[in-house]
Image 1 (cartoon, rainbow, N blue to C red):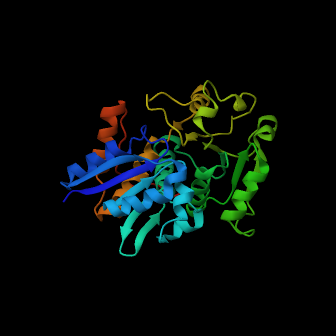
Image 2: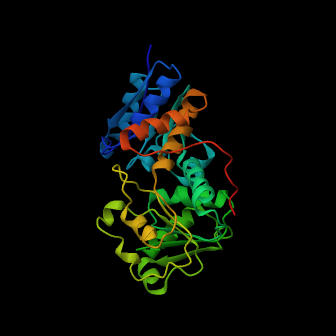
Image 3: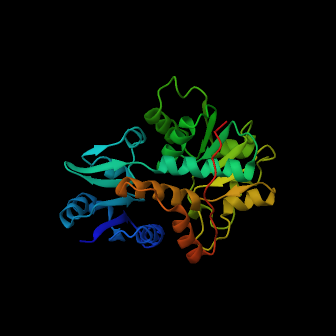
Length: 296
């Protein structure tokens, strides 16, 4: 009997996960299908019960359900418990089990960015935004050895609440918080890499908040967002204008999906196959293999 996997979100029709997950399953000869499920936020509880009845083996979780699903699963791994968000769910004997592969996906994508593009030491990243995805980014950076971090967000209160829920006072001593307005007036200080977690839709034409900022000390620009047409996001256009290395979120998407695949199947994800599926769809190449460098 064919095993059923999928991704839930609202909306979800834009998701590229079915494309590369199905390619991975077929390449290994698995009798399985991976499909999108568009679930409105007020139906998430019913949806999880329905998927259990239907015999779904596992599924990914995307916006806006990651935090809600975290409170509905029967069990969770260490990372999703700390971060408070689940993006991978698998079937267990006692019910749904939640995992978070966003952390590992970001770690691998950022390591690759450091190794293949920046090729210089980075010691003090600045993260733009304080939404749900920032929780995974901050946790990933700290787990990877970064002690000095700065968060820039519109609301200082939101950024401080995020830190309070994620770290103890002792472990967040070297994490600074500034407003986006302060950053535009005062600059990025000693930060040497910019990681954007603000919505791409918030800046459709250009990343105007960086217009007045001295980014001469920034060694690279990393965006969690990506454009399906392969063009650079507004944020990355700033980095390109300064002739700095840039990276969008497509590799992170693939890496977190590969980790999900391994949780469900117990097999190594065929990353090259998954990347080739994306290349055929988007016209963009993603290479894999080689030893990743350690974080500085």
